[in-house]
Image (cartoon, rainbow, N blue to C red; front, side, top):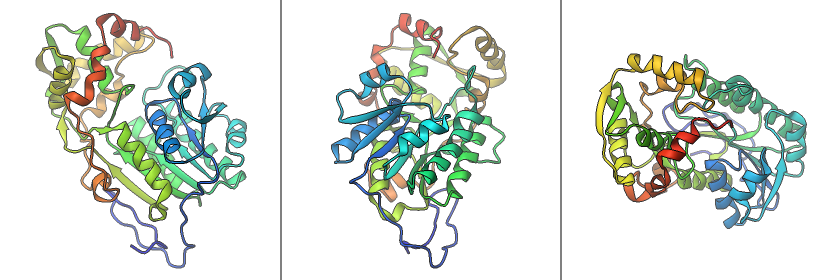
Length: 342
């Protein structure tokens, strides 16, 4: 591969190489790396992966107490602020050599929209990076993200992704399938719903939707490798786990990990819509929203898996042994989670 060109790796196909581009550079390890969304699932794993490999990490967080619990054991510098705040972004980026932008929302709630938190915040980050002369940007997108998508979440990530690619910065876009790990917001949601539905568990659309779950540790490793490999500059990478799995197959593995049993019953998505809509109206923290329910009908697998093919990472399997964290879920804390205001 000619390191001077701009290519895309994955479902989008290769772009034409651009002649006479400056030689791409790996990030400067002597300067701090700002990680947004640092106390989230991927953020926590990324801060740990970078720190143990000699990177100076500066974590942009909103809740200092939550960050202390998640990151307190790591040599990480905390900056309290919001990615929607341009002033906080400029201050946090001062003196940094790179930024890893992970902060985003998957579910809209009062005061947090896809447009503001996923799209506009990314554009503000790009402007702040330019202002502080931070040239290197790793952006966490999403498999299926597209500015032309009719699905609000995927649209918002797609527009942000386009902004990154036209930013003039030395960018890398990562597009993972569903991510799993101790604090994930997909597998844990399924686990909580299992605890709350004794004997029978409904599978939207019969559970035929296909995913390629990837471990948070593997995503974090790719983030580090992207910073270290100059070949990743101006590239987009699709990331997935070891094998594609249907929602039914994932649920079966979750049940095994939780050491419990349910009869899996196919339910048409249209029958679930009224229940989901009612939950959105009544619950402060609904487990599923109408927009996310729509995504269960979409294929979420990757045809060219850069995790294995480019980064040469052996995937952590989506298996019962790796999902033992789900055993901590009880009916009581599953019920309590529905009423938490986040």
